Amino acid sequence: MGGNVITGAAFLLFVVGVLVYIVILYNELVRLRNDNDRAWANIDVLLKQRHDEIPNLVETVKGYMQHEQQTLLAVTQARAASMNAASIAQKATAELTMTVALRGLFAVAENYPQLKANENFLKLQTRISELEDRIADRREFFNDDVNTYNTRIGQIPEVFVASFMSLKPRAMFQVSEEDRKLVEVKFQSQGAAGT
Image (tube, rainbow, N blue to C red; front, side, top):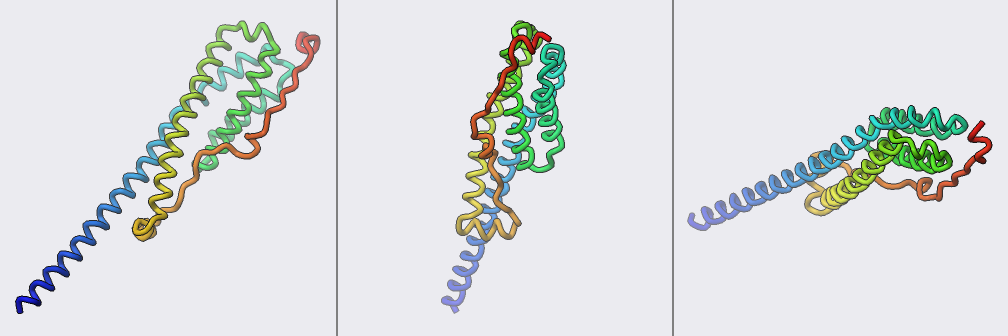
């Protein structure tokens, strides 16, 4: 009789230990998922701030860059695509396109001395550059969180709890192959810019 009680108590203790361990794993995975969401929300706030500056930049540049409508159109289209993106992956792709379009705009602006001397343009360029730097920093944190999350949900025993929770790997905020290529910027001659 004493052996059955000890065996029963050991089995009960084992079951309770397994349940406690599963609860700990569950809570850790919830925390990681929430860390991911928070990291993306931090990026999204900065992206919104950058989006808010784009119309001001385009309006400031319009009068000076009449012959660069394609560059302005690329920035406007990239902003629209970014604002209409639904998922994190779509948003990340659209934001990378936006970054390339802004770099092209700032590169073309070098060809317009009056624009480079415009105080509003300089303030907007500085503000957007600061936001770009902050986005890059936040992207690094986001990617670290995604990497930790993806690693944990793929490891045993977390993979079983993650499967129960229907957790799927998440995509990192990466540079696409197209964006890794060098951007070719062609300047118009000063005579064309002045006409």
